Amino acid sequence: MRFYRLLYPLRTYLITSGRGEESNVMAADWLTVLSHNPPLVGVAIAPERYTHKLIMRYGEFVVSVPSTEMINDVWVAGTVSGPQKVKGMKVTFVPSKEVSAPSIKEALANIECRVIDSRSYGDHTLFVGEVINYTFRRDAFPKGEPNVLQGFLAHIARSKFVTFMNKVIRPQTRKD
Ligand SMILES: Cc1cc2nc3c(=O)[nH]c(=O)nc-3n(C[C@H](O)[C@H](O)[C@H](O)COP(=O)(O)O)c2cc1C
Image (cartoon, rainbow, N blue to C red; front, top):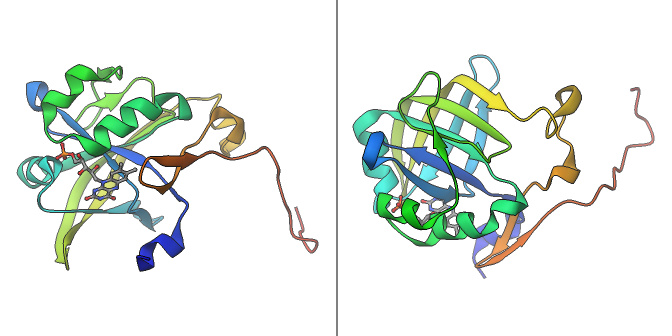
């Protein structure tokens, strides 16, 4: 039993990097919000990933939020290395607004990041990205909150994933 499995299910994201023909995408579970103001996210990426090389080179990446409909592409992104994998995927790369790394048209959201720090911790590198632009599907985030019925994806282990039920639970002492 690996200790980090105790923190699962974790949401799975797609990280795009590179530019032009060398645009790439990988799956990533180890991602977190680090700061609201300034807006910062951190993602832990192993040095052997092709994505690691591209983020080191260009200092940019996009966090793309996949839906359950993208499960087959998520699996390819997370099990095949290098930009040639994209040819076998259904996702459509579209230009981002502020970074050269592409956004993904079919994704629920795309968060454009510029690397402001990177540091090696054990067998991964923590890339800290400042969020410089984001786009999202209105139906996936009505009223500024996620609509779980749009099929947000979380990872259990290996090729097992889960999604959320529309079962909202609330604390008794709530004020809203
Ligand atoms: C669901 C899932 C989550 C993953 N999360 C991470 C992660 O957080 N960090 C990481 O370095 N690799 C992670 N991986 C492994 C990479 O996605 C995988 O090695 C991928 O093939 C790397 O692609 P690249 O070499 O083209 O960059 C994950 C794989 C899967 C299937």
